[in-house]
Amino acid sequence: MTGISNERRAAFRNAIETFLTDRLNGKLDKLQPDDPKRDELIAQFAREAWLAEAAKRVAWIQVVTHTLKPIHPDARGTNLFCVPSELKPRDEVGSHALGDAFSSDVVGNAAALDVYKLLKLEVSGRSLLDWLQECDLDLLAALSDDAEQAQNWADAFRGITTPRSAKPGSHTLAKQIYWLADEDPADDTAYHLLAPLYSSTLAHTVFQTINEDRFGEAGKLARQARREHRDHETGYHEYPSLAVQKFGGTKPQNISQLNSERGGNNYLLASSPPNWKTQPVKAPLFVDSVFPFFGRIAEVRQTAKILRDFLLSDPPPNKDTRDRRTALIDRLIDELVDFAHSRQATLSAGWTRNLNCRLADDEKLWLDPRRAESEDAADAEFCSHWQWMDWPMGIGRRFGNWLNHALGQTLPLGDIEGRQWRDELLLHTEWAGVLHHQRVAAEAPTYIATRGAKQ
Image (cartoon, rainbow, N blue to C red; front, side):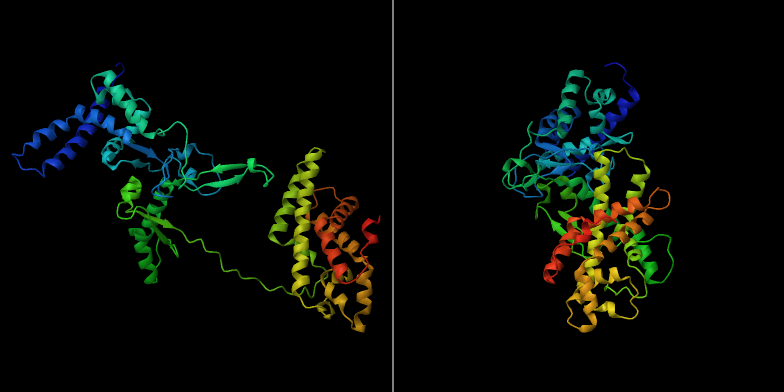
């Protein structure tokens, strides 16, 4: 071998021989000085003899990041080694978020775990396995003075991350999900069959993080300061309703190495639904219009901003631009229909009779439709105006004016755009469907002449 650094070669060999010496001494301490097995053990733990045997036993185990046995201990199938930093980044939490700071797991015959412990040894801040995967010449020279022998052993050790079969396979006891990959759910060929694996590396990181937060010294000091009503330089984390899932029973090592290190314990974060608290819907009194309230809804405000920014970008006048704009307008109209429905269905019929209700007549007719069903003579005029159905055009104009204003003063918007927004509301399927249902229920004319009017 050329280009060998004697200093690095010695560091690698020293790490290997120290590892073997420690393991040998642990076994010799259990034997009497005159036990004939001592010489046999000493020969067995000689560097080249042990490495030759280890190169054979390494096939019994596999380094993985995603394992199958936590899903079912009797499942037989493919385990995978996927470097988190090489996975596609996503917004959701997953093993991809671990980057380079992750712990590899090991599955297979527990009798070969000592081989993995050797490969985990660190030299110059990196494991022997990392150096082997880079075909480090100094490490090869440290394995054996015979270059061919060293290469054969290195190839065998590197295979610890390789799947045991060229083609991934699942099992009847493994979790499987049919995922619709096309548009027709009635087409059996439109599905992909997914076999999700348990991310052991992510579970181990979560376990270590939670344990440190719960039992670490920093957390203990912060909690003590809280109990004593003292300030503390750091806070602490709590995990309410934390659950523990056990894998492997009394033999957690049969699941994986990391599972054994955790004693079979795996944390499950609480996933119960929140306690939903609905804010009571209040009648919009003392105001001239409800559109300012509508515009302050978070989803409405965000959608209007997206639409404004899109129009300010001066998009090309093509189908994609029209489809994008229409989709955003549809989202606003859906929000407007929901906004109205919450008041139409919740507030008592006739709430617009309140003297403090200052809404324009069109908005009263829109938001208090059940008042139109009243047989009270005092509401006869209200009922007549509601059934005449010219008020939806007024709501359309108000919506157009509101949207023009919501899009700001930087866009050249005027009456033409206002009429466009009005027409999109009046012709919107959800808006028209609600009106049709209300008209049928009130036995009102089902045709609204003003929807097609030009004003």
